[in-house]
Length: 270
Image 1 (tube, rainbow, N blue to C red):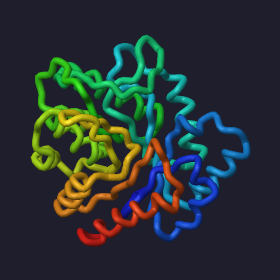
Image 2: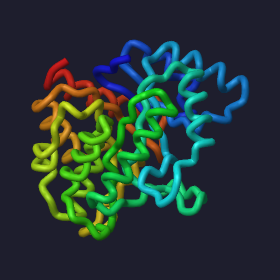
Image 3: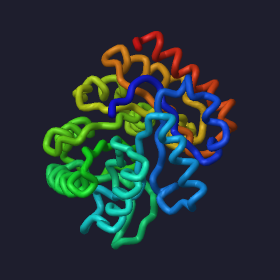
Image 4: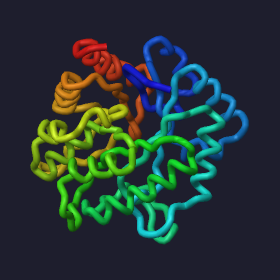
């Protein structure tokens, strides 16, 4: 399955209203951890949504960079979920979320080293074998830099090239990291091979202090992030999806922000 155009992150509060926008939303993204243990009625409702909208899945808990083995039981349950709803596109965060089997769901940073590249690539190979699908990895936000020997674009590119995985490029995360760690977000995008990008995220963040932005995904998208999205799409026409994880407004209100994303997509190409 290929996706195109403008997508929306699906949330439970949209169950009753999302069909009103069937002709506007090109694809949706669901979080498996929110639905893997749903009851029969929710499964039925989600099945109808996935049959109506092209659907991708975005996970939270594979913990690609954690020390130790992957949680295979979770992977097998995840495969059942993806198969049940016929979802072929699955992504995860390039981070770690667990320690000694205890899941935090916090997206913690990785040391950007050749050793970590090898460790992540090995896990990606196992994940792809079990899920019988290619994996897409997302660039995360981070608030501290661990001992690293590689710049982030080099680190990401090495993992993509060695594993055959693709990238979910979160534009907001690039901007937040660029502010917190003092680099140019446009040059970051220039350093990536955009042929490796499957699709993009756009979201809001909190300007917490004069020297710290926090990736909340719970605010409207900032103007600087819209501009970065416009720059990216002028370089390559990629699908883009609006995320809102916290402070979720009614779908009718969120669609006003979605329509701005749609206008930028129309300005910069199909």
